Length: 631
Image 1: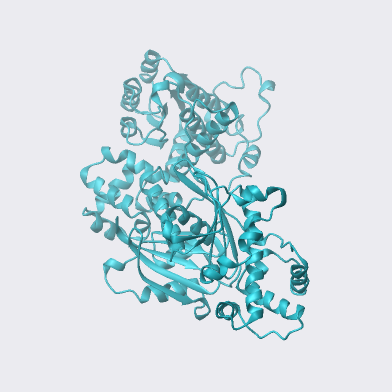
Image 2 (image 1 turned 60 degrees about the vertical axis):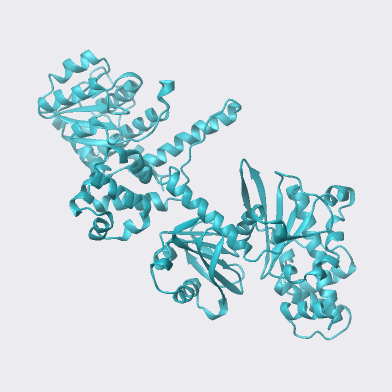
């Protein structure tokens, strides 16, 4: 499969930064390895590599996947075994990329394991891997990486771990001596302190002292080469101890994960050892588990011999991320564009196609460039933005940026017949939370301000809804009455028609409708406007009601209409009513209300406008507690 635009892949370790270009799935071009020490930071290394690529549009990188020897949590990346650090979002902007995915290097390598051919791995010892079982992974380089794969449906979930920092446990007197030597340098001796490039050198020095010999100042590459060619007996012993310790760590991983699918060994050291590793104590130490020796003996161990296996894994992760953005719900604004696309004009649809294909580029492109790339006029771009419920291009870009950079995943999980009551409850709450996050990203500040202005200046507000959404209208009426604002609620279609006919200038018709297509409510909107009243709608975008409203607050949520029972959608509409109530509170500066049970029967009667500033309502004190946990 060929990609429409080339992708940059990177594998960043403590010593080398490896790069390649992928224009077709599984095919790496222009592979290069740069020494980290020769570049001041990550950006400099990437820039150096990109400058070596041939000029031309076929090498204009849009997406990049980076595997890095470091835990990746949030936006800030700080390498453990090197001084590089950077912000993922800032780096994406500096490099001019639409997408930048950064993952732990062994998480990427783990994702490559199911994609390895038989000839790309070498089995060491016996055992047979069971299908659809957990797989373990570890490997030595600048540090010790540890990961695993858990089967999940048709795919796999990679574990992001820092298992290399578990405490080293010696198995014999020689290893105790090595531990004592390491304690002189480190208060905590982890497996990584020994099972790494620097660890090989430490073992070499410790063994030299144990044997009363002078240790040559050798580093890991020189030690392994001396062991391979048999020129240094101490180097050979060092490698054998190294392999035995790796067997201990691999066995620990196997029983910890229950890795019945096998344990794979990667990294930059072991694959270079070849037959020396096969003859080493690795497998014997792996199986030495006392009462669990038979269990571990059935688990196979493999050395990864495939070149660029990490590239294969990070490519798969990048592809999955891009597919999620392009085909899944993705950011709320992108989902809204996909849903509304069929109702747009042909010219606006071309703008929509451009946004969906290159959302990151649209964020930084001026309107002239967006119009040129879409093949439309600049006013068409503005009309498209307004069709999405935005005031203009700047407002649209703010919503788009919020959707693309949000860190909270927005997902929907289907409830099944097999779910327990606990699982059912968790899914219902999770789906509701996801829908709330989507609506949050759609909120438009200027539209909310206009809605609050309508309510603050209104002579009276009548609330209209039909069916299950009647409770939303009733909730709005209750809150408005608490402000001392005259308000009525109508849920019967005949009464709605009669009430709308007596509205006048200065009145507001608040219409709540999930789809915005019910003819009864559309007639209410027409009657209200004909009488000089304003129409405030809480409804779906691209609906007929939006076109009839003076101000529309958009709530886009697809409900299963087969149930005829609005669940999440009704909650979303209630929250919009709460937003209006809080906005009205801030606009009016309402004082602390009396407890409702202490009010006399006249407390909720309509009051003159001048008296409303001191009427019961939502207090600013309670507003403070309401927003104290917001991000």
